[in-house]
Length: 289
View: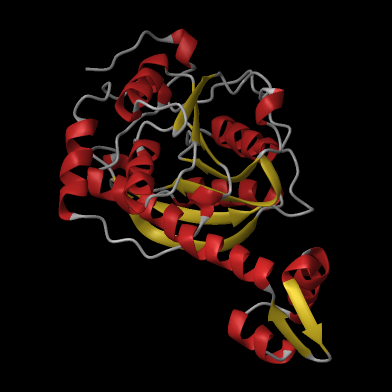
């Protein structure tokens, strides 16, 4: 295929195609203006397509997920936990699989919605062997996720408070991070910073947050933090998640797909302040039902 035709077919800039040809020279056989994949390149493409596919879960997938979620610990309001509806959880897991991000090393910074559990099930159905990592301060939630998946080769958990530095073994290691962060500005900024630390260059961040139309200033404040942090917005899906609760934001949130750039930087907000809408988790006993 001519390089110009490849640019049009892929939707990528000529510079991106040229950089790929240079970085992955072992994948290509070039003749003049023509560029084609060799055997190694075709094998790499097959692996990518295997992990990036349109997924229609079996009818029983949602029922099975609902059954698993019934055993999940109740939401802890001190940690701003409000559970997503199961259909929303499954749909977000589908997004990650279809985008190929489950194949690139995936870390969940908090996951009371159970997306990692849902995605582990989809990966198993698709015959894809890939481990997911979940980091959370909630030991009970981590225990539920471990017990539900039941295989450390598919899901590994990390008990950690993000006010402490990210463990070195998790820094710059992931191609994708998923989070539904606290909405208090200090907590939101801290989760953005820890996602930056965890991601490889050009890694993706899937970020959920919502807001009331009567309080656009609060949403705008989050958008400013995203821009100030140097994140590139690739896509936004309004009302992507519906919650069982969170009426103050209309029980929905927007799913933002961001990309780390050379300009992505730490926001340097203090981690000593109030991270959550109510109060810091060590200041309030667990009020979960």
